[in-house]
Image (cartoon, rainbow, N blue to C red; front, side):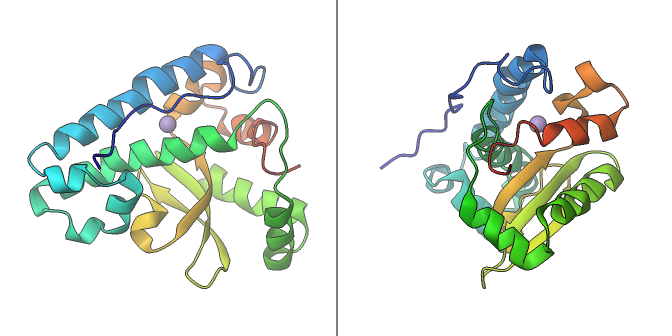
Length: 194
Ligand code: MN3
């Protein structure tokens, strides 16, 4: 069956994450940036229908097997496509705490506050564009790190659990150069954790 590559619908409104993330940023981020990643990903694999028929997450897991001519575009555009799929799902105006995840975080990082501090430090210190990640490895152990640009943890053999978009398009309209303030406020709209 052919996979349809479509912009996922959000199950909340663009203004629902106010005042932490403004409506204009949300709408542009979703309808322009995310859509552009999807369109360019489709373009990158236009000559490779077998690859295009697979879910983007599956393609990123097997990035090293993607044809050479398409690999960089798939890494960047496919990464942007998949990263944002996860990103919107994890955000919301109401907390929907994942208790199992909270428990796993406590086992790995100690207190939840300590994890948040560690993750925030990674987000604040990441240079230029990229994402901060909480991932699970093949043994189920949690790790945090940042990756440049739209590189996906899937291509490192990890399952992304929480991704935090640090590209300026995610916050610049409201926060300009104040990334630390964005990082601090972002926890309010990450619905998975209290
Ligand atoms: Mn983004």
